[in-house]
Length: 312
Image 1 (cartoon, rainbow, N blue to C red):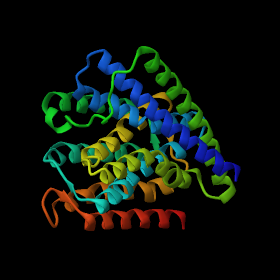
Image 2: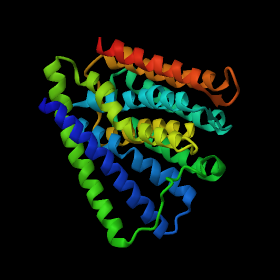
Image 3: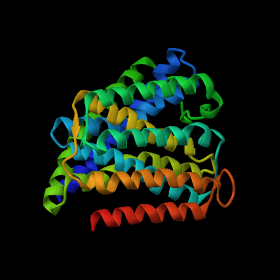
């Protein structure tokens, strides 16, 4: 019971901490006159990936590498299977051309690069993390130079210029909440894994990854209910690219990440590659550049199968 309480408290702190950090980061960027487009693609992406980043770094440093890897692999599966699935069941989503010219190819490249780095030796080395981070910066530079239109509306709706003391307060509280939330979440997850007799990887790809995907899911549902433009597919794919290149790249730069549970390499990583690939045909069939409720049912069915088979 205590472990579940730790997990719920930890996730709550991570979600609020990420949100406060995001508000502070956007306000700071506006104060420094950084163009909105740059904020949307860099500051917002980094801030929304902060929970995954903090949890992964802390897990790897604490000697639970499978939790770090499971969190990212599971988050990427949850973003496309659960978050995208639920969103397009609630309301159809029109997809931009940049999906197949930039977003999807980069996500597949990042996924295959990660697969190549970790599959053969079961370890993400520091130099491999360095390559991933360099690729991330190259991608951001490319987007800023050539794809400005594709990301013009990735800004949060309530961006505002906060007074200095509020910005500092949000930054401070957000940072502390992320740190405290990661401590509680990892302690709860490791405890739950040992109590249930399953590996940290299983808890990572199911409980922890869904928890760190909750902000995206909540944002999507609210947008659909408010009849606003739902969270864009580009946003979710961007989140997956950041999870792989920034979260795992930075984590393995700090400390190499070793796979302890072979299930990550024989099962989870193939589910991640599979669902990432699946999005491409779904976008074009039956109607070009649109995702509807049928696609949502397919994605949710794939995600449910993954969770069921992983837990069983």
